[in-house]
Image (cartoon, rainbow, N blue to C red; front, side, top):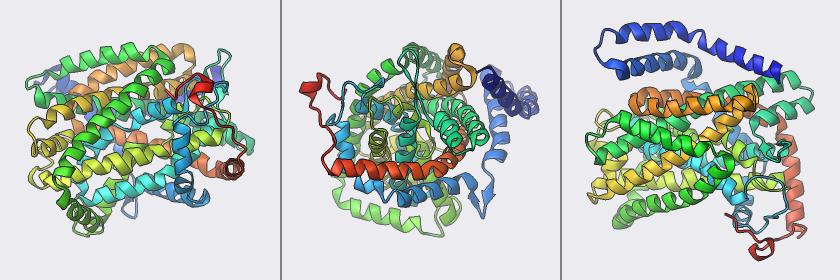
Length: 514
């Protein structure tokens, strides 16, 4: 543990050393502008993000390498697993409903709670602000590529969450430690690739810690404030940041059991609120839906699409899809590793529902709402700021809808932050040890405040970089271990189809799926 911790600290220092002169330049620049502490904070953060973007977003044939990596992985796993995203869809729903929940299985949470916890880290502002940003930067056609990314991403999610169950570690106190860090180190170690596995595990953990501060924290706080400020004019961003930071701090001290309890109730409630609001608009414009789909599909292949033509539209769609459902990123595998089950593949099958719910259903509802109302044509990117474009779509139909949206956004953001705090904490503990987890929680709470006061552009780029970078070590390990998952899937389906799987009712188990 000590050696691993030292390696982790050394890796963190190597990441920070090149940033020091960048921060100094930002401080020097900020000193020329009388904008106070908040202005200085924003300038420093923006300079750091500009430096990192040169490292993480390098291109191959006009496409960011990491986007190609995600697309290739999702298609490969779909073919390698025989379209598991279609074959096991109905069974996944049965599992989530508790049909196969054995109360004697080891784990911290039920299948439903694991799904809700993971969904709370994916279903959120990526579905509201993320879709709006994709349409602003890539046009309506980006929605098509988001949907396709979600479909193939279901298979990536299946593979990574199955591996998380296969290689999870049960601690002496009965709690679960799992995720890409463990299947990268242990799984690749079994293949005689222990040095590579250990290196990838530490790299993933470092990136996950940073991603939890970005997409899982600062982006959420930033857009939650934007939504609330729209209905409460004059609300100071620093006041909002302090209040939310305190609330997040109270919840994350409780660990995965409290997080699962909160998210299992928040996620369905806020999803229903948001979906009903979207359906209200769509049903009121029912005859325009076919034309909206036509616009999305046509512009998906249009060389004249916004933001760099066809390539720009595709890139924005895939980036926003990965940001929204996190398939291939490896984050959800940490939550699913804690599910109560003695069938690793079963939890992977449950996990593939996430990209479907998140991207294929909710993102499309948002996208159709924006396209049908036509606000993307009337509101420029300079006038709207992610969630503000979605709010404009709602308000164009009924004036008080942005109030409902603001409530949903705040709930989405809050649940996402507390779930990502768990992902980041587990990654931090893997590198530095569990005894130092309180340090991580303190930094996480501070980042809630930072996200509330800095500009969206810097937060968005930082969030994308950290999230997408996680896919490199994660998918590399998944590629190498995919044969083991494919064999286990065939065995699982053979036993399921032959009736060998025991079925449990809520009455006999004494527990509900919650």
